[in-house]
Image (tube, rainbow, N blue to C red):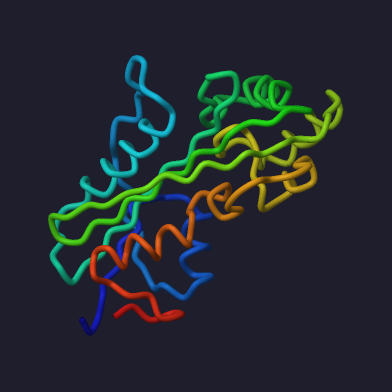
Length: 196
């Protein structure tokens, strides 16, 4: 395969940064899918279903085009924490996560032609204890507002994370090792910045 066209089916700036970090040129075409969780749907199943739906939602693709999609959710006490609606919602989420361990699920979906492959990474993330003043100051940065669980591990949020057990890039929103493995399953080899 000579030239591979890559479409990122996401508006996430973090996912764009991560693809650029490993030298994958891409165009951005956010997928519009219904993200409502289904009744009794397990978190990993939910995340993977959304990643596959986002990959499938991009039209005009052929065997020379690779679509990359992902979905990241934060789960604690069996509750899925999405993006906060506003400051008070972000504060509620951060209070819930403070001093505790939660799970981040990141699903990656890769589509080439009609074929879609996917996988889910899960990562345990432990937060430091946080006081109300710290939570308010963090929210005031604006960083929590467009992120699942109301934090970003790659920014100011790095200072409130005590430890992670698993793939750091999955917590950022795109498990890069998993992505490369899925691309290979679709017959596209990653060669440190080149796709073959």
